Image (cartoon, rainbow, N blue to C red; front, side, top):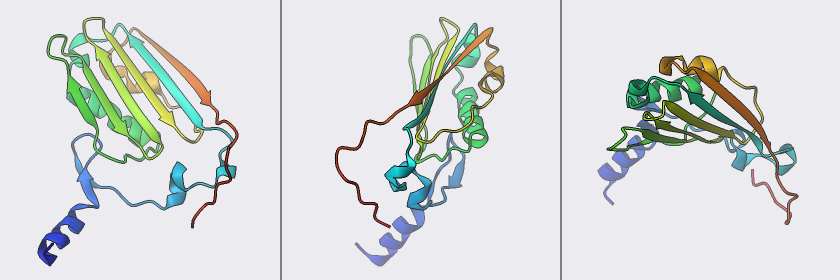
Length: 167
């Protein structure tokens, strides 16, 4: 590979499209910032997962990818999440429902919308416990009549093999 091409590739690596469409640089974190770099003794559990169901939502908002991108951006900012890649989206042609997924250094954030049912289903899994956010408030743009938030503590099985943490 020639030096000019190698330099261009290296210049492109730290910059990636933002969480949901904005171009921004992702800062490189130390291995200790993510689950893969943590000492296994630090993991008392496998973290926490939120399962959020919003019903009675505005059908047009549920079919609006921009609105869902704003939701992901709010969650990333307010929950201090760290995207590992750009969000991926798929819109279903018949119902106009959307599925979105954001890979996080902490784990993942997903959303599924069903405009024909006025329903939004959101899932956030984090490898470390953290306080809950204002999910109902963050969903206001979708005008839900009812929001149910379930918080699940996730647990790890005992380690089967000794693990050595490499600095």
